[in-house]
Length: 76
Image 1: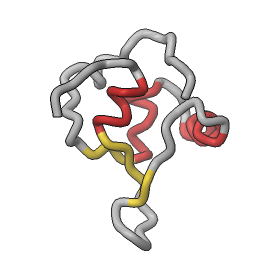
Image 2: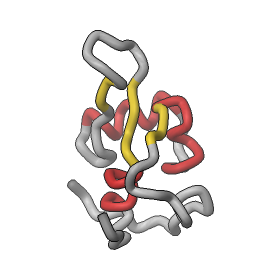
Image 3: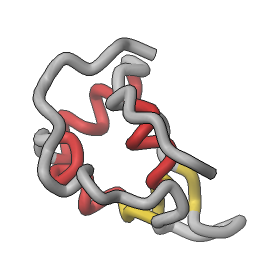
């Protein structure tokens, strides 16, 4: 995964690694519109989302995925 070089958004500061972030909230955490986020996931620049539960349509990231993406260390 590529190292992210943009400044860390305010939403990421104070983010718990155990939080669940819905895909539609991606702009707040990555700074891109939905279509661009989708492209960057395909290019493996942004971490892929996972379904909330098997068979669900809702897609999520965990706080840990986003923190790791920005290179922020956290305690588990």
